[in-house]
Every structure is written in C-alpha cells, then in structure tokens.
Image (cartoon, rainbow, N blue to C red; front, side, top):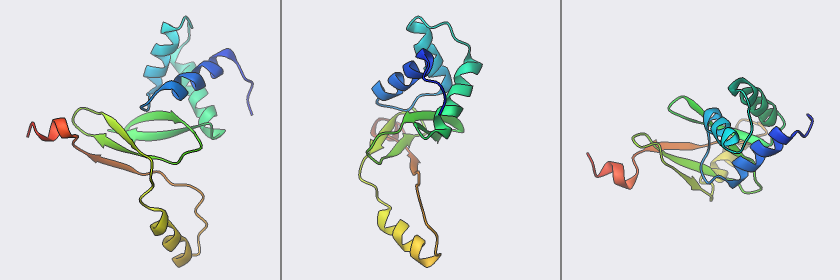
Length: 127
C-alpha cells in the first residue's frame, strides 16, 4: 500500500462525494479548484496506484476511462452515448448468469463490471 498523502486522500474524497464517475482531467480540475497545484501526469499515476490497490474502479465511456470509488455496494452503469449522462444500477442483473458460467467452465469469478450503452429518455426523444 502506498503512502497516504494529502493528494491521495483528496482524490478519494472527490470520488466518494461524486454521484457519477470522473475522468482524470475532471479529478485534476477539482483538485486545482480546491487549492492543489498538481500536474495531470501525477493524477494519472495516482489513479493507477489506487486502482491497483482496489480502492477505485475504472469504467469506460466512449473509450474514455472514468473512475469511481469502490464502495461496499455492487453496481453497474447505464451510459447515454449522446449526452454522456450515467445512471447507476444497484441490483446486479447477472449474478445468476455468473454462477452458471462459473459452474459450466469450472472458473472462479471474483469480480465483474457491466456497462449498458444507449440513449437516455431526453436523447431518445430527439431522434
């Protein structure tokens, strides 16, 4: 485990207080707004470390990496491909499927991520 620096703690607090996943640029901007004078490259290294330590998780949206803090609850995301809004899904729709795969292929699954891409209610009415 790496050292618990002020920057590390600030990144974890930012992610803990956000309702939607953030990019490294978003995290860096929030840190700079809070009075930290930090380089983007430093945040890239820090999120890699936090992800390796399983304190945060990475999700993808349009090939962009976004980060969320790992909480006790298991969740997934609905991602609008038009406006990029995200909604969190708290009840996992694949637990039974996961058990079936695990048994069928004699494979111990320790984690999974699931993201659904489509159009939110506002965007789908525009088409």
